[in-house]
Amino acid sequence: MIRRSLLLAALGLTLLAPLATAEEYVPDEVIVRYTPSAAAAAGDAIGPRTRVVHLRAGETVAGKAAELRGRRGVLSATPNHIARASWVPNDPGRDGAPGGWQALQWNLAGPFGVNAPAAWDNLGLAGRPGGRGVTVAVLDTGVAYSDRGRFTRSPDLRGNRFVRGYDFIDGDRYPNDVNGHGTHVASTIAESIDNGIGVTGLAFGARIMPVRVLDRFGEGDSAAISRGIRFAARKRVDIINLSFEFDSAIRAGEIPDILEALRDARRRGVLVVGASGNASERSVAYPARARDVLSVGATTEHGCVAEYSNNGSTLDVAAPGGGPDAEVDGDVNCRPFEAAGRDIVQMTFSASDPGAFGLPGGYTGTSMAAPHASAAAALVIASGVIGRDPSPSAVEARLKATARDLGVPGPDSRYGAGLIDAAAATAAAPTARRVSASG
Image 1 (cartoon, rainbow, N blue to C red):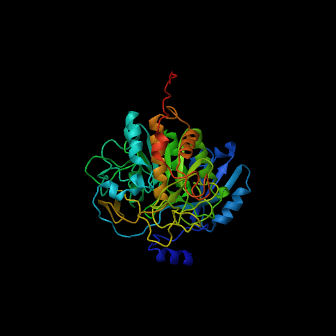
Image 2: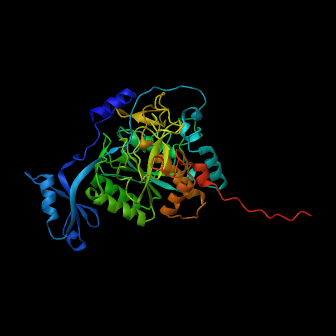
Image 3: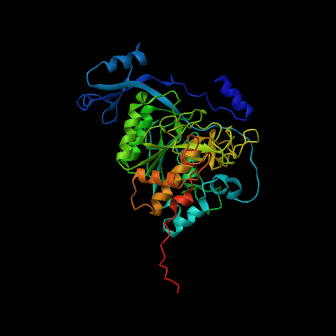
């Protein structure tokens, strides 16, 4: 932890909060999965066979989990682990250069962006501009989606942009953002265009379902997260974006409730997209590591894997996350000893004032990469290039097959299938032309 903090300081980065450890969990709860017959007698449901058991005075999480695992009808009993939002904040300042959104959003239109302008042309030809007709659930710190009390709707997310979500932190119908992270993520997906405000989102025609599963510090437990996944899947959204991570030490057996919720989403035809994590690890963090999630690593403005981005054999694709390059031998795009590339700019607010919107610096991370993939997936679905109602597997395969190869030739552990290319992913197959013999 000390060594990583020094490294981040040397790169001009700061940690918003200490990195999670495997011991971070809700101190008085255990997540229990039951057999179908045993589940009927339990309360506080997360899913059909998953419950939250609250500890009594004097009980410990480890002791209670061990006791529950010994009971008949119990499939698993685990701590209610806490996940963290997957971004690495810094404050490098703003360029302030003229040129509109193009001057800021290298991630959409730069040499190592996702080729957004050509993708928008493709969607216009398909009659579904900006991914119109697709709904993306953003499971995060909430979204600035409404004017209510002290909360203000983002001025660049106006119009008919939202479907009803839920707040699984406060347990009510108002998933307002009190951090700014969720609004930034939602803006990468669907921020408005041609309104004289701010910048643009990749799938500007898509609708957002705000689902709050992280608190004002960007932390959320596995119970809230699994509930949020099930809620969004049952509401028949097309895509679920998860821009957060558990500590890299967390294994599948410790979050069975989330894995079951992810399987349920997949069965219901929902593509789940997850951030690979920001610990510079050689393995993808959960929930992105799960088989039912499209895992997304981060690249920089130079086209290099980002220094902080987790990678490994289960990484699926890469997308812009910004920040410093990793040191990769033989990768001509990587410049680790030069100035870091720019961060990801979208409209959000200061965490200290939910009404003060702007284009803040400091947003880099796999949290920023994941919504690029979610938005590209929304464009693929809306475009109809792989059918009217493509399966999650088909959308995932399309994004991989059309990704831009980076690093060593072919799929690899640093970039997965490559950098998301929204234009290639939404391009219709050329129509074959008849040719007559000449002569």
